[in-house]
Image (tube, rainbow, N blue to C red):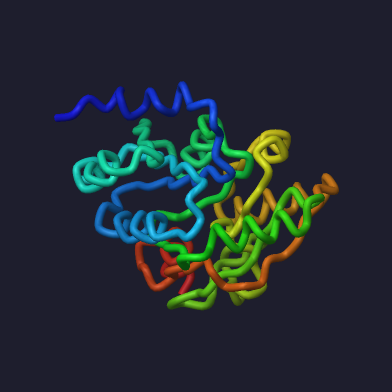
Length: 227
């Protein structure tokens, strides 16, 4: 099998030319869905990005299935870590990233082709903004557990979706990334940024495609338990 250390080396010693976006993709046993996410990333009209796949100790064929992407696209990097959960996996991705802005792509979701380009333009138009959020098309179940009371459900329109976040890297580091929560680590980060008076703005075009019809999603797991 190909030496994975060569793939990790690019993360540890990034090139001098730093990308605008670092796209963090945390994944665990989703090789059958991850390729859809990567295909949507490769099709972006904006090319100034790096992607960091954090494999959270998958036991399926994740590495083998994405190896062709790693060979063909040097901007996609791969790092396997011991299984520790999605929050720690995302934080690891943040640590090894080098883009000006950090954003996310859940391994079971996808981007509209203009997702990154439109967000870059939005950031340039609002140069004081450090954190943008919003702009998702939700497929499937429209309800998620309430972060304040996981035994009840709220409509997803009343929530923030972490995959839509685009955050200046230094700002995200100052917030110390995500904190572990049973539900709502994304909302917790959002709330902390708001309380810290980070300049934030909502992006309304629905270019992040949130596949909530997937029964394997964390919130759908919880949803099944409280039905």
